[in-house]
Image (tube, rainbow, N blue to C red; front, side):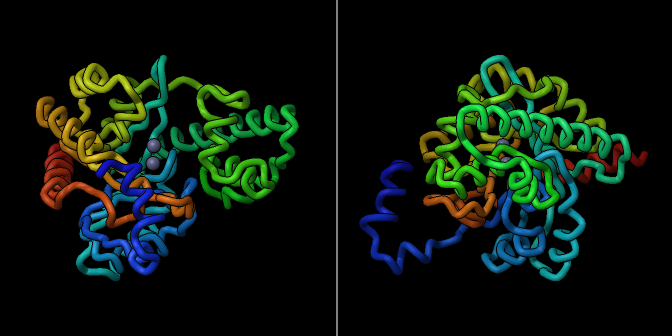
Length: 306
Ligand SMILES: [Zn+2]
Ligand SMILES: [Zn+2]
């Protein structure tokens, strides 16, 4: 069954009761967002949810922010079977598309790293503001103040603009806003200040992070990009990701093994409530992958100490 058929079957063929009670079998989710960026659940709520679903290892990876980690850590401490991996997600650009990098175990205490994140968040705000202006010029009357409110003090992102457009009825679902207006080729899209993946990988490593390439299919350019980034310290790539089909997962797993990259992954959950949204527990790498990542982090920490 491919992804589309699966979605269709969930909504049309499977009886309602079953559709409302999907099974959560994954034990690991290394890609989750909270209100510290553009997720809708507070770190505490998210950690409670993953604990409830029996996940064993989860990573919080907010965009340009580690602000949700302290709260998440405090809640995770209340669930003995759960290990929380601190993370962050950075957005970078290559000529043809956008490339996201996850950084696990980054040093949140580093002032230099926090200043960099602050710089990226400021860039996001400037850019989001310009996108709202462009939308306004196109006759789409959403207010900048509302977008800020929707971000709730977290890193402002395009999903907040999309949400404001949904609220005002300009689009039905957030993804329509991306497809028609604020996606890379949309009329209200604004470029970001350039950060390349070749810059972001060493930046993460310098601050104690284990860099992993997020959703590689969306980035296009698979093997050449992975090969280049592996040479400068990339440790993993997302394989078990969101809505990827079994065929895609198999292909990516082959690539990860060939290049000796840890096959990571997760739901990329934002709690947006869109139909077919992939939730924590629905997809993720096997437990031994998480253990590989934890071992790498331990090794790196020892290297730093001695
Ligand atoms: Zn991403
Ligand atoms: Zn993400």
